[in-house]
Length: 292
Length: 156
Image (cartoon, rainbow over all chains, first blue to last red):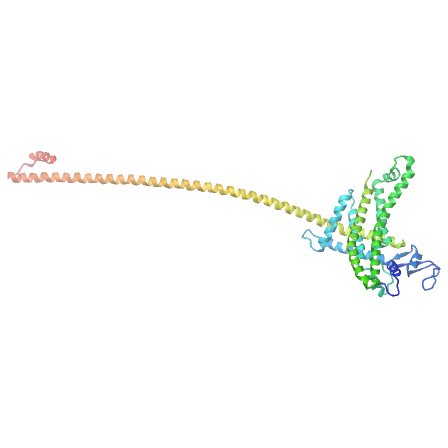
């Protein structure tokens, strides 16, 4: 909730700032007037400006912690169920887990026609992990950040998939796999694919190469930025709705209704985005395996 | 909205989780599910087979029952026939026996009659001789008249 000393725009900016740990360059004047000494300093950033000044040498502690934490929850839960799974009658959580595995397996079978033991587990990891990260979006925007603020943690963004680093990190991972399998399966054919398509003539090689490389690079970018954009926009609307609560009692009721409505709609969005990320990964890897 | 080390961190985490999933989650889960699927399919097939067998057994049982009924009817029939035959035979034997008894009884009666007749005849002869003796007052030469008396007696 926006306090008396905070304007709405400050409130929003505060919510969109990551808890950043990074290296400030030498000579940078910090928020309290102190100047960073020779060789720079690894510190917690105080505000977006300091985080920006850190450049690449910074890490979003909150994004990493939530992302890895949720990944560990995924691994722990699924590993426990994998140990528990027998040929007997499944029950409870095992049913849910098997349903997800079966669903992912079916999707992979439908879309991916090569022989690769990596794709199905990869798809499962992506689907569940991204879903869990998106799910954090449904937690009221102030609940965890505000609680942590009372405990002395200044910034907190609890939805890792609203951080482009997280989504692009996964997309780049997928992109590396795409390149690896393209070269492994097609060998020289991959080069030929990049240079001899769509105009099959040596004179068009530069044009072909340009078009194909742009097309190739567009895949990981669209993959990562689609998820980021959807989740960021969703989170932004949650924050705006939350900001409405500060506009007085008259706004509280419509804001509450909006909150419920958007949350219900968001259940669809987070599942769909996780599914899209998984399906596109499978499709891209499937394309990498297709030899023309 | 800075791109920074988080990207690398996420990539590393991504690889770790995918490898974990590939090694420890996916294979056992899928194996268990496939095995169960097979088990269920086998079970269903077995149930189908059992149903089919049951049907066959029922048919066979009905056939057996019919056969047994037919056999039983045949046995009862032949038993009845045999009983009749036995009764018939017994009747015949009884008739024969009765005839025989009757015949022997008749023969005996005849014999007795004949013997009685003979006795009577002898007594009559003796009586008549005695009578004649008394009438004639003198002794009669038995041997001389025996022939005559016997003749008389046989005419009685």
